[in-house]
Image 1: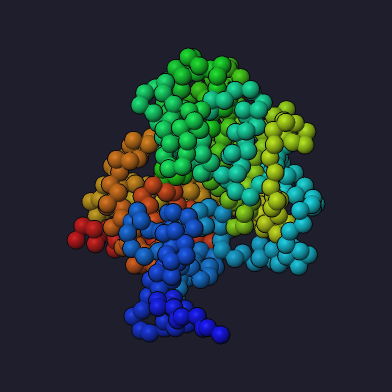
Image 2: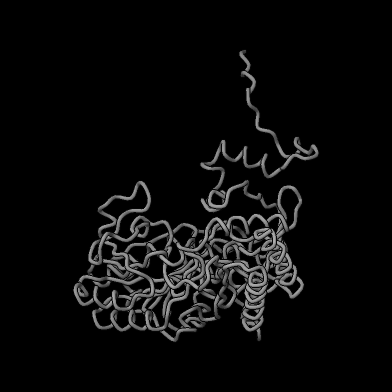
Length: 448
């Protein structure tokens, strides 16, 4: 019997690479690139924007996580938002363990799904009915289908720099003029998909009104991040959102808030609670899963009735409302409703941004920062950006140098100049102070 030829380039296991001065992150990244495109399962994790080797995380607790080399970091991505109560919170872990003991997935209804739906409807008054799904991309895709089905229209307006997941019609950038439709930003997206999406400038109320004035009867929905998090942190102006609400009401279009990031992050009722604006539909994710895959879309009951099995808009998902994921999310939602939770979270986030701004000023750095609830943005710019073009004008190379100086000091920021950061309830004064001290040293290095 023939024997298989030995592998000429065997992939080492971590247990085989414990020599001194060998980075286990490097070893894992080399292995990962052989079996996974780019060595990662989500592009920003690859460190392509900032350079260097991504850190492979082995465990997390509270405000920290540890990489494959055993180095501890203060974590400011928090799984890109969900870890609002801190990593491995005992209550969340217990809830997950208890749910898992009863089975991982049933493909049939559970009471837990009802409890989560009721909790979301209670906390976000604009949501009268909600459907659970497994990812923000899925939620956006489904919500837009409802909007188109309910209105009988095809055109959707989005805004430059807002990210709504990787559904084909949302991977679109601005066209060459005001009334031109979007162009795909990803290979594999047909032009026919992009032609139903128009991309406008964030925070430009006049432009929005002009477009509605010329083609309002063709617009099915306007989708917006009221607090954007994927062109760094960028707030919508009250006037911008008020104009959006007025124009959608006037022309019968659906106003859709994408609060996958900002929902339960900037306030208990999301950004819509802070702005006092009631969207027709809302997309949620991240925090409502407590670190496991849960997202949701919901809104007015007369819109949600268009969904199958009641209506003709089809949407389904094998793992929607997964009992283990719902248990993690429900536990998290209970914790964030404790008295004073958001006041403390917001104070710690502002302490971080104020502290970093102060040490940057002392170092003579063109730098500013912003915070809202448990989200923050760091900008290598003399003033806070208000739109995509101003954000793109920030000094990306300066950020990259700062990122690596902070990483060396054990502070893990988002590995991109265009991603928001996140603070958890476990970011204590000592953790924030340590971060500011690391920032002081990092700015000194940049200007040394």
